Length: 137
Image (cartoon, rainbow, N blue to C red; front, side, top):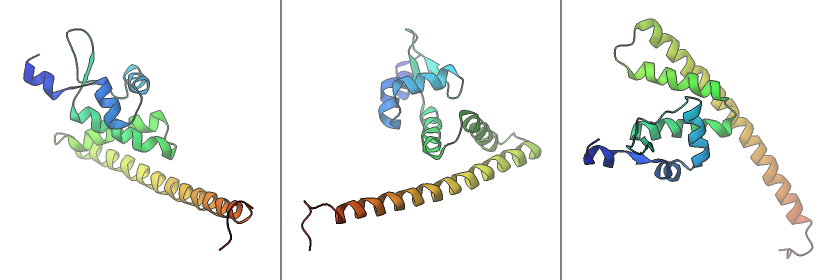
């Protein structure tokens, strides 16, 4: 690996900082084959490219919406197919279907989370109104 190549790669700590995922989580994703680092250093350290970081960010965005690891894998594979100009029409159609399904599921999850946030804010307001330590306007 040349010095320029080494600079183009990020070590796992840098990736963890950029993605706000723990090092343990990133290692787990590597162990299960969800996001494999593009290279290893001479010492065996994981080295990640910007594309690897983008894949991890897709996963990070999916986590709070309740997607399973298998759904994450399926979406990443679909995105790979759509990014590959050599993919055939049938593969592209199947990949597009996966993306649409994930978008529908993500939209539903966002709506559920918004409702939960509304309830939480409503409850907080309820408690503030009943707290004797809070001055009344």
